[in-house]
Image (cartoon, rainbow, N blue to C red; front, side, top):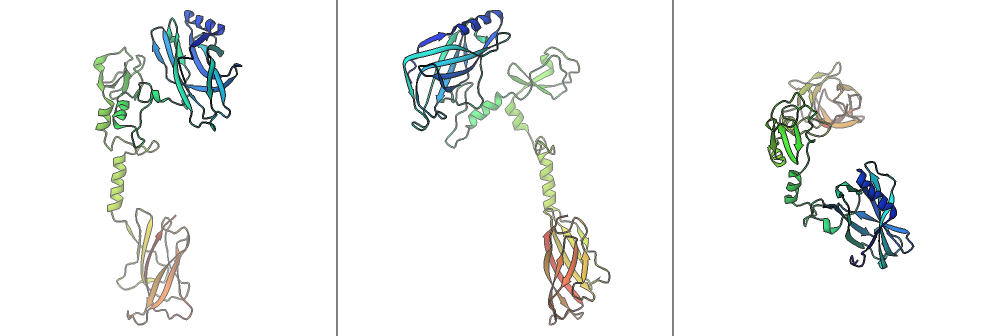
Length: 368
């Protein structure tokens, strides 16, 4: 789109009245820019970019995109809307109109996907510092603003912000509130002043005007480089430091789980020299080992696990029976079922000759 041909600009009478408010201490905020046809009907809203203030003037870059335009039209007018601030009338008015007799054809999104155009217009004022622009944070940004001050960071070939730009962004980041001469500070508190980050080197128990001797200039990158695991919380909701969490994890991974004696049912005793036990590791996996002696009719209760070591649903593990002579020739298969109540019950097929000893081991994920 030619910006040369779009050179016929006029401030409306309402715009002149609003401009006069600048002399009374008021301000002007540009609220939106619309593209209109020859009938003066607004057809498309343009995105305003960050402005550039000069001596007695303000430059407003604007970007046109047809991404939501359903019907093409010939644009013959650019219409700048504004409202007053600082005591000036706050009602939005048509401030200025830029016209072109022939106009430009703006295609719909279906006719020409991705069609864009951008340019800038400068308005002269007696005190341009009183001028502001209402920017849509979800608005589009033109290529001319990429990599520019007050624009956006360019992306590298991997679609990421380049490290050099990240460093510049961090160095200029506002990470603390501006110094307030009506507030008190403790040693180690941070504030900003004239774009510089400072750290208090002493308690300031009484509010005071800026005293440079009480503050030390610091650099954001130096602070980041000095961070340790003790300085970084696990999350916004968990203040535990990352170092502590890693230490806890290392301890959990290297410390053997505590072993407990298995609570056997009445009449069930440990087999000679056999240790009946259970333990739960840091992942909630429970391991159990059994070697008992007794009389074992089908559905005999062998043990009951305490709360915190029980499965959420029934689990079954294999075991076997043998005689007191420990002969392997008379071993018989069986199984033990543990329910959510923690009760471990022996079962076997009808007709199985069960010996006096039961041996087995198994594991499962414990619930409550």
